[in-house]
Length: 101
Image (cartoon, rainbow, N blue to C red; front, side):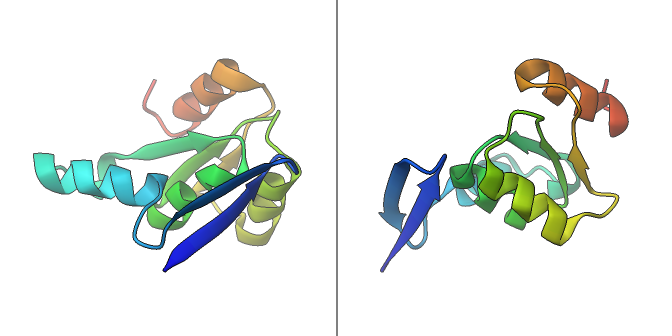
């Protein structure tokens, strides 16, 4: 099987059903025997969604594409943060929010 992921209204990713950014991070955690509780993910487009579905804490930067902002609206809780700043500044803002920085 496969997944079809639209990003930015113009990019199309077709990937194996068992793949994705969230599963790749999970693989690395298992390989290094690290706890998923230590992870904070960040993203700006639809192909980042699997990270937010896989891990509890996440940062969506201010310049995120509409599909990821819609995900935030559907799943807003204390573990999902919508930054007021864009790009790396938004990631830093979120890491401060989660007490990592």
